[in-house]
Length: 138
Image (cartoon, rainbow, N blue to C red; front, side, top):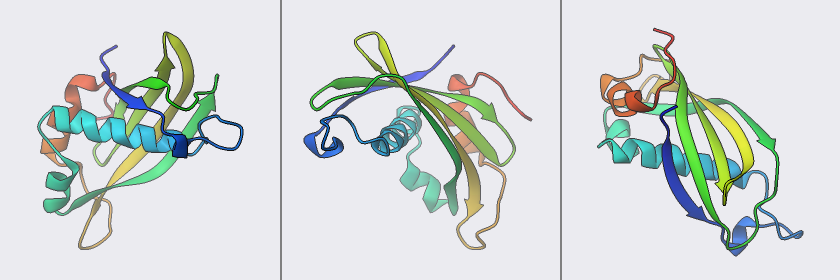
């Protein structure tokens, strides 16, 4: 399966009192991964928003297998499991030294900045992420 990979170093502020990454921070890691996935293909979120399109999170899931700790260098792997007319689902995995720590998925819908209504995904976005797709709902 084709996926985008990036690394994230766990900061002290990412951890909780138990010294492990606070669960909600994985959603931030996933956001960094999808932003960098687009950037690596020549499209930034800033450029997308300049066209009047926002990507709104409409659903997310996380499954925790092992904890990450302060100063761990994590690998986040992301791919597109579903690419529809107005939404996409990005699945992500967090790895540490060959061990799977967290799996999750985030569904994003394209919204018009002016109306707040769901609109088709712009071709610039679908082109940018197409190589990381494992299926399509078109």
